Length: 260
Image 1 (cartoon, rainbow, N blue to C red):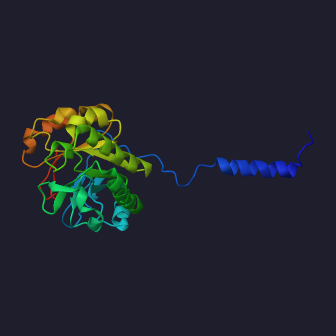
Image 2 (cartoon, one colour):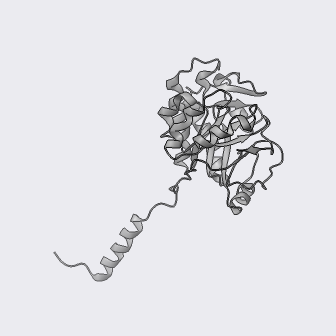
Image 3 (tube, helix red, strand yellow):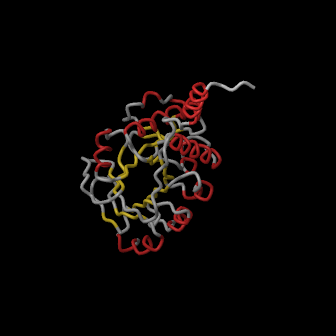
């Protein structure tokens, strides 16, 4: 075979090297909070950024890219709170949800359970919400109302439906380079611990359920835990033993907090 001119060979090598470069569109490594990581959860009132903790969990719709950037400058990771299992009439995308996927109220004013079987409708809507979290610079997503199958939603939801939907939400977050937490849904932790990067739990101490969160701790993943009605003297010792990141909060999830 005739030899290619050296200049041609050099050009070919440059082109091949360029093709081998990773795409700038690929997400980088996800954040993975470790057990015992301290945090603040504030979903109402004017955001107080003075709490000296490494993690803030705030409402994804209510806060701007500038707010997230400010928290990052203070060396905080920021979690984007979203409702993925219930419709909220006060959100800017509320009219995009057809009546056919709206079920019974979930106990909070202006909220109704979603028919999570209808992924044809819900997947693009949830993808758009998680895009918002990514575009604002959040590090992770806290998807709420992830246990509809255990509630009176108005739909015949099964455990299998819930597993499929929760894994869909986890995939949507991971595809965008975001960590994602499993909210409550204690019974499905053994099946889902591998799909999620941390857990968020409400009131496991009040209902004697905190040991169910152990698989996350054993996997080296944080459990962000809140109580509302039980004083810290009744749950903090167990929280420290279990390595939970535990707070006492008020139901409005304002600034006030008491950490273990």
